[in-house]
Amino acid sequence: MTHPFAIVCDSCADLTPAWYEANDVTVVPFKLRFNQSVYDDVLELTPADASNLLALGTQLSVLAPSVADFRVCLTRLAEAGEAHVVCVCASSALTTTCTTARLAAQGLDPEFDIEVEIVDTHAVSVGEGMVVCDLVRTRIAGLGFEEALGHARELAEHLSMLMVSSPTNAFSLGPSLTLSQRLRSRFDKPLGLWSLWAFSSDGAPSMVASSQDPSQLGALMANLVAVDCEREGSMVHAGYLAGASDAALSLKDTVALRLTEGRSLGTVQASGVVAYRAGYGGFGLAYVPERYLYLRDDLPRLMPDPVL
Picture 1 (tube, one colour):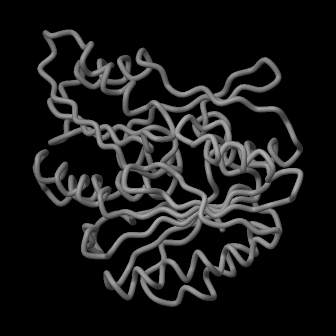
Picture 2 (tube, rainbow, N blue to C red):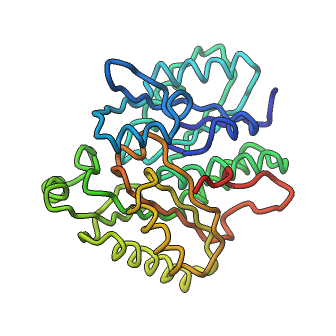
């Protein structure tokens, strides 16, 4: 089916395969490797299965989509007659998908008459998912390529992301962290410290607090959102859980009890790559002023049915 524009994203958006299929969104997945086997994140290895592996202490490694992976996807869309593509990617401060997608677009056969625009969401998980969902809704509502693209970029610009990572988090492997952040995060596991991270305007995570009691960080997270609500007005927010551990559920409940303003889209279970980065038991929240979302009750829901 040819649309005014096609939508592509990486699998960090934490939407479900059924949702992608129903809304005609193409996913270029991360890959998870364990026991000499490699699986497409979300599409082959479900979030629940990935979280269970992490809970068991299984050694996983993450492989980001390659230039070739994106090129195959874009070539297929061009051959299907798509003239415009919006490719939504997780924060370029945490992963390479923005760069690889851009290189893939630049390397397409010049005979293809196709325009590809890359959107760096400066977020991950439900933050990226909000941008993907918004594009689906604007496309169904009849907005043109340029208008829908501009709306998605404005949404990404005003999106905020907070994450509480467990002591098992893999953020120390992130290339964007400073030396002091790497050293600090390395001691999280032996000290049993949970960490609260805030994403900067360019999508880089910065540790703002740590505690052995994750509920303290959940309360701080809710307070930070409440401050933004007072300044920016009503917020729309969505959360993710990296597994259904007691600590993660307690974090979610702490935030839900304290965050009474704004509209909640629910909480979903994170993909394997997000759970790997946040650590089993981690929790995150993405939120944005309601005025930056394209809201109409007759359009598909902004998020899939929440699993938790």
